[in-house]
Each structure stands twice: as C-alpha cells, then as structure tokens.
Length: 291
Ligand SMILES: CC(C)(COP(=O)(O)OP(=O)(O)OC[C@H]1O[C@@H](n2cnc3c(N)ncnc32)[C@H](O)[C@@H]1OP(=O)(O)O)[C@@H](O)C(=O)NCCC(=O)NCCS
Image 1 (cartoon, rainbow, N blue to C red):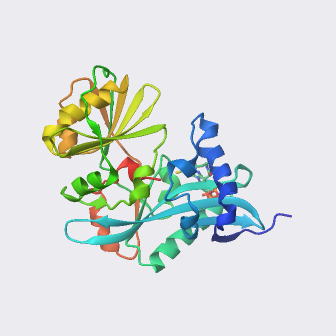
Image 2: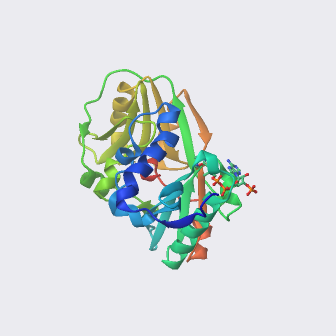
Image 3: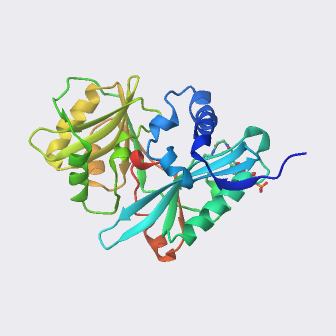
C-alpha cells in the first residue's frame, strides 16, 4: 500500500538528497553538467528550505516545488513577488496529482504571505494553465552564427557596479543580492560579467563549449559595440536573451545575420494584488534571475 503523501517544507538535512533527485532530472539525464546547488546558490540552499515544498511518503521525497521570493521594483512602486521552479514528481508517481497539490499549496502560502504575483518559466504551459497561470512573455531569443574575431579588452566587473547601473535604468526590475550574481543558468558552464572601458555599460553572458548565451547587455549605448565584440570573441555561436523593444534589443537587431524569435516561456499568477495582472505583458525577468 502507498503511504499517503504529506506536503511540508524541506528540512536542511534533506536538501542533499533532493538536489541529487533534481540534478538527475534536470541536469545529468539531459547530458548537462554542474549541479543545481551551484547553479542556483541562493535558491537551492539550506537558507531557502522554508520555500522548498515537498510531497513525501514518510521520509521518501515524491515531488517538489521550489520558490524564490524577490522584490520587483517598478517605477511607480515595488512589489513583493515569487518565482516558482524545479517542479518535479518522481517518475513512478506522475499523473497522481502530486505536482498539482504542491502548486496549489505554494499558491495558497504565497497569497497568505501577501505576495502580489508569482511568475514561472516553462515549455509546458498547458500544465500550469489548468491552475490559473497566464502566458505573457515579452522575451526575444536571437541566434547569431557569425561570431569569432578579436576581443575588445572589456574588463571584468563586479556585482555592485552592475547593480548600480541597473538601478539607473528605466522600467521594472528584480533587485539582486550577491548570490544572484553567482547563478549559472543552464546550459552555461561559466559566467562572465564585463564592463566597457570609458562607458557605464555592462554585459552578463554565459559560455558553454563554443556557444555564448547573452543574458544582459545594459547601461550606456556607447559601450555596446565593445561588449558585443568581446562576447563574439568567446564563441562561434551567440544566443541572445532580450526584452522585446528594449534599447539593447533594438541595437542588436541591426547586426546582420541574427535570427530572432518570440519567446513563450513566462507564465504569471496574480495573487494578493490582482491589479498587477495588467503589467504581465510588459514585465521581463532576465535569464540570470530565473529558476
Ligand atoms: C510535469 C510534472 C511535474 C507533473 O507532475 P505530476 O505530479 O505528474 O502532475 P499532476 O499529477 O499533478 O498533474 C497531472 C496532470 O497534468 C497533466 N500534465 C502533465 N504534464 C503535462 C504537460 N507537459 N502538459 C500538459 N499537461 C500535463 C496531466 O495530463 C494530468 O492531467 P489530468 O489531471 O487532467 O489527468 C512531472 O511530469 C515531472 O516531474 N516532469 C519532469 C520535470 C518537469 O518537466 N518539470 C516541469 C518543469 S516546468
């Protein structure tokens, strides 16, 4: 007989076992490398265990959802919000309603805590739509196969300097702590943060083999050409994550040979402040911040 499942937060002592299960599903079975504990250091961490919900049979972990809480800073006001990710059910117990129960529990908990909205990123929107999640994504994905060439001597830049440049930009953004800059989005195996000489502009990009993944090209326009030259020098193919209509997306669209497509990964759930739903189509969460 199967023991009924109990939904509860993950205990810090259970985290290594959970990480092993999630790594198997999301990393190693897909021929990727580097554990989620390293990739999402502020999220898959003992300090965030209260936000990791498990469905368990006794001590056996059957399913989980991971929550990342964040402040969303819009020009007119700030919001308390949450991101949901690493939704997983043990293969032998799929289709029994465990992920649905966990998502409902997460939703109720966030609503009760006053989170204005939640967001997640998925290639399986139908699963979340049943639970009230709304698709709205202003993201663009570009692929540029003509990379190469010489580097432009942009210099490494630290998290504080980037955070200062981000705070001066217009539009809504997610405030980052130090651990946010230690994230390593899939499938990158190394993260680079560069600043252009003589200009308050920065890039954040990941590298995996001969591919670069641009997560952000921010700050002053005058620095973009040097930052882009450096990214191209690191790879044969450059994949670009951008917000439709942003100044950097407009600049990148002038580079010949880049193939662009609209993204359809972001899904949103209005919670304690349903009014914020009117913004979902305009809000963009950069790749570095996602789980
Ligand atoms: C997706 C996943 C979490 C679902 O877990 P689960 O516990 O089986 O889900 P539930 O039993 O609560 O829900 C199953 C329902 O969702 C539906 N469903 C499952 N996967 C779906 C998908 N990809 N698209 C649409 N519906 C889906 C099922 O048809 C079922 O519907 P029904 O209740 O009308 O019969 C599980 O399949 C999993 O761990 N997959 C691998 C990891 C993954 O892809 N995670 C999602 C990352 S965004």
